[in-house]
Image (cartoon, rainbow, N blue to C red; front, side, top):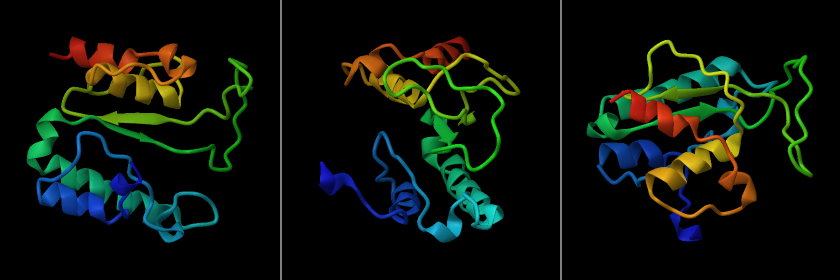
Length: 150
């Protein structure tokens, strides 16, 4: 499994060489392109846009769903306390943008979800069993929106 972990620069190369795996997790290549303070946020935004544009201009685009989210709150104040769903609870709310030819344009979904909702989407698409209770119980609204858009 660890052999499948590659450097951040591999993503664009895999898209261009038509060797992209079915599921990819892309992280910033370095702190220089992080969107977390005190880094220059625009550097991170430009890196993300470049990677997304690479996918959108490739043959992969017609079957792609990109989930753009952040790993934490980024230092911005959240006035809503996170719900306590288990021993860990949810942390600060973070946005999730779904970029796909199947996404409803301009649609905003206020369904509560968490990072395991993305895992639930992958498990559903590839007909995989849940890894744990948290993803088994996660919201699966991403899948239902894809089906509605056909």
